[in-house]
Image 1 (tube, rainbow, N blue to C red):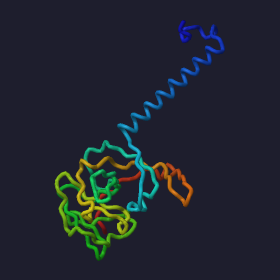
Image 2 (image 1 turned 180 degrees about the vertical axis):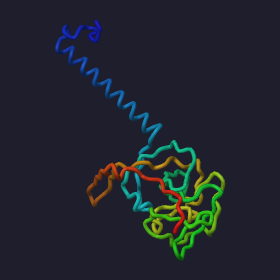
Image 3 (image 1 turned 180 degrees about the horizontal axis):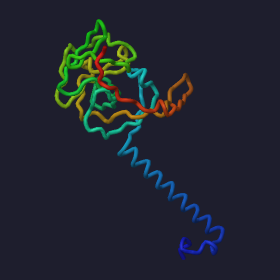
Image 4 (image 1 turned 45 degrees about the vertical axis):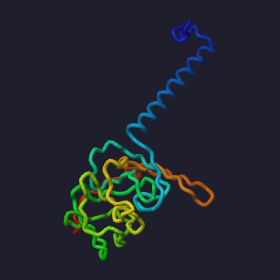
Length: 209
């Protein structure tokens, strides 16, 4: 007889325990499936290695990345899987999109997009180090130009080691940074960010004053 169809008052203690265990297993199974769906189709979890996005992101940060943004936009922090000199995925900020022209004055650190010097409150230091790319450059169709927020410590679209990024190789946009796990000597350190620090905001295109 199916014990789930019996009147509760007629159940033995063992049968009640069996039903409670079954209910718990069903809830856990549903939770696991829901989490798998979320992290397969809604968010992906990515770890940060290196300091190219300091002070926005740090080595050891763990990020939630959304793949639902249809078109790249200025200011988005993105995960890039395009093959590169480092042979690994990278995280950078989009500075310009297709058909836009980027110019950099390496004496002042000013970055211009389509002739407009942009305000960059998100950077850790000025853009003073010139790499292998000669400016100005125009972003090809279907590509973006990216840089790290730690300009003096980032290899990005200023270098032919990275170059322009094909939009098809943008895995997703970084939305949240819930926690960090990093090596501290021989120990692993864990940091849980406060809710106010979770969200990674997209920068707005603002002319410098």
